[in-house]
Structures are given as structure tokens and as C-alpha cells.
Image (cartoon, rainbow, N blue to C red; front, side, top):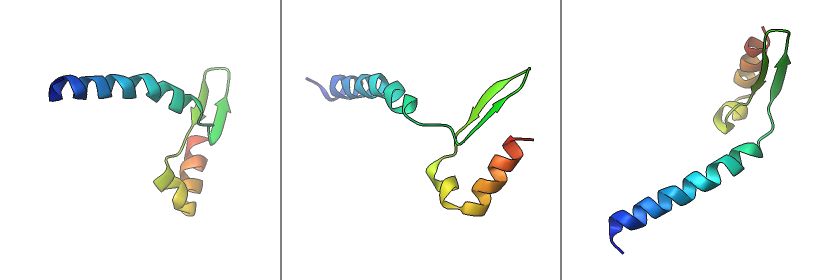
Length: 62
């Protein structure tokens, strides 16, 4: 196999696994109104900064 075909095979494998990994994450906040149903998920670097995470969640609920 050539390098190109190996890279393509690896990328396709990652694409197949990505939705499964994303489905396991639980939202940090959920917003349900008549107009919208939304989930807010914070990334690890944002969660690591407590005040920033609190600010982001508060802004997301406005």
C-alpha cells in the first residue's frame, strides 16, 4: 500500500469513529424554550478555567 492510501484509510476510520465519540458527551447546559431546544457543551480547556466556564454558561442561558 502507498502512503496515500494508508492516510486515506486512517482518515476514513477516524470519520467512522468520530460520531460515536461525540454522541457520548453530555451537555453542560440545556436550554428549552418554545422557539429553541439547545445544548451547550464546553471544551476541556474552558472547563479547566472555573470562572470562564461559569461565565460562558451564564451567557448561554440568557
